[in-house]
Image (cartoon, rainbow, N blue to C red; front, side):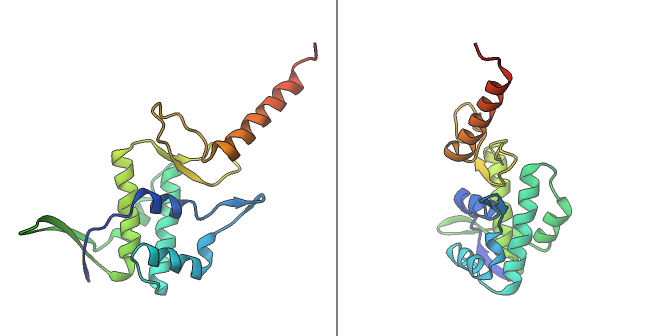
Length: 174
């Protein structure tokens, strides 16, 4: 069991993880299929690079992508969180929460905790891009909660142009 102060990954780390399976030139990619890239991501976020850690990270990423698109895969999340405890500790500097659990799963656990944190603080704001040909996710920070695309430059403009062309084909010329 590992003892560590609870460090929830930030929103940027969560988005990086969720967006590690983009579509490039019309072909789905998995940036985490490359162990080197995944190990670098794990190191940047305080994790180890052993094979068990990378396997748990891929499992967590896949489960969280599924959960963000719709149904939460409870069995997968339970498996990731199994045996993990968060306990309070008080000392002269105040209250801290510590995670206890298998070392190879701690970064995956932090990724799951980051996802649940975003869901609690910003309900409905983490979502997939509305472009069905895109596999990216975005965190809507607009005041009206109306952002639909991962990027207005790419997906937003592309879909708006496509709709305009479809309307132009249907409408008779004056």
